[in-house]
Length: 85
Image (cartoon, rainbow, N blue to C red):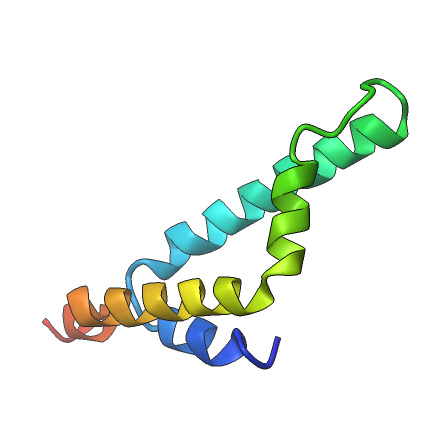
């Protein structure tokens, strides 16, 4: 969290943040539902297990991707400038 939090604070000041937040929540929902279906034996395998394992195994790449997205969103269209008009 210490690596990602500064990027999230920068991202929160952009117009992209609501879409980012909803998109991340949807990814979490899909991962959790697939995990629940596997654990309840309704499916035999979690189709997203390899993606989940990769994300957990590469935290620095995930943090770098979030940081890059935050900087790009801030440079493209800050939310503050739209509110001043």
